[in-house]
Length: 195
Image (cartoon, rainbow, N blue to C red; front, side):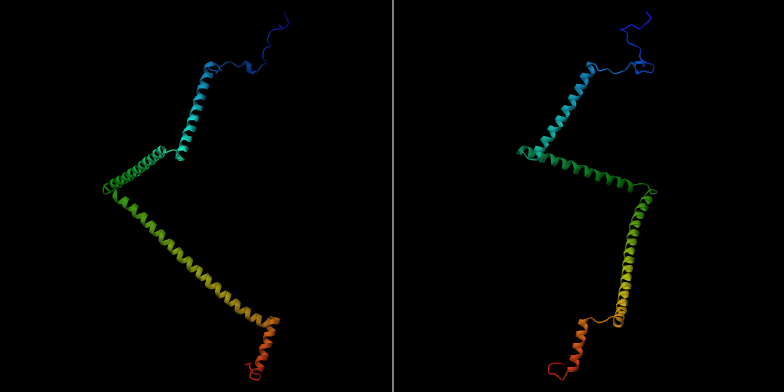
């Protein structure tokens, strides 16, 4: 009697998960939940299959398999276009109605709307004038910079000529040219054909 019985399961250790109380609403995998899950998955699979069939049918219609599909597609596009145009004209009519109601507001409201419209127009005009003034100033700045650069280049070129005349030696081609020119000038009038 003093020892543990060989067929008894030992008690779980302290702090074990097996000692936690069972929750009354704990889910169990039973036949009903498995059947519901299977039904749900079958419904999803059927929806996916139907979407694929619809997409394939639409793709075949775009390739104009037969004349009936072409006519049906044309009618559908025309009805969609008419629906879009009707929605657009309705939106335009609604906007016109809103504008008419705003114009019929009492006198103390109307100046506010007019002032807002005038302010927006004045802001656009001021922006346009500022842009034109900026463009004019930019053109003037570029012209001034271009004139200063041309003056600098001209000055450097004139300085370069003075420097070259003072310090640079003529190349052998320039020496030959100068010698030939000097000889022709001394023989000018003496030898026929040389001036």
